[in-house]
Length: 319
Image 1 (spheres, helix red, strand yellow):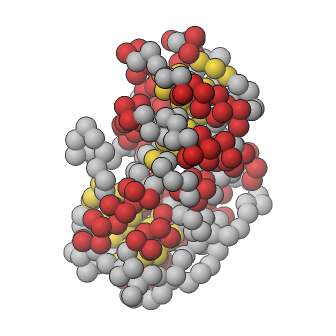
Image 2 (cartoon, rainbow, N blue to C red):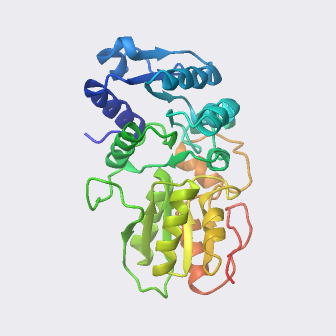
């Protein structure tokens, strides 16, 4: 059975901890009584309650003591409520702490605006030294967790709630910098997908439009700079699909890194969700749905500058 991103994280970390006694798991009242890590390794599992900043501070101390702490809480509470602790722990101290943040974007849906997080990439990408990942599907999540455990570097890993996704084909055991799915020539538009829902929408749009598709997992500046060099060798016009606000998002970063290319963003826009709904209904209310992606591809194909609207289209960056 295919697992959601957060369930794949828990299962993979539990398995890794069998061989690596330095791995510890901290959660901010998310785990429940059947958390697999708690069952398998009760002496290395800590539920700190709704004290997210304190949890990150604890993880900094554990990392200084030689452990590999993995901490998890809702993305808005990790990236925003505990922002100072993240800046000091992951950035200033460069501590080997991995933060796994479910409920990113508007995957909380019915939980409401307080539990939505469309700003976390902007916050974390501004902290030097943090490896940022937004895996799509179970296989990518497992690969990212294995890499984080091996590296000892600070990580922020973004995922959704309970949705499952069919994994993309991986060319090997390691994640590629850019996972390409070619269809059209270099003169055509290329979709760039980020995260779970961004990738789902890009895959649907690719099936309709026949454009090329480039999928990114690692989103920090170091990885994006290398990815931008690879992207710009293949195409010059891009539509980036991401469940995040345009400000501080991946499209904005790529536009700066590829000044000779046209980069358009389809994101969550400037609105605050004011009505309930499931995950996709809330995204659609923010202008992030398949029609928005298809419209952006059509405009990019005809060389029309993207309009700045509630759908989150950023102006093309071409020189």
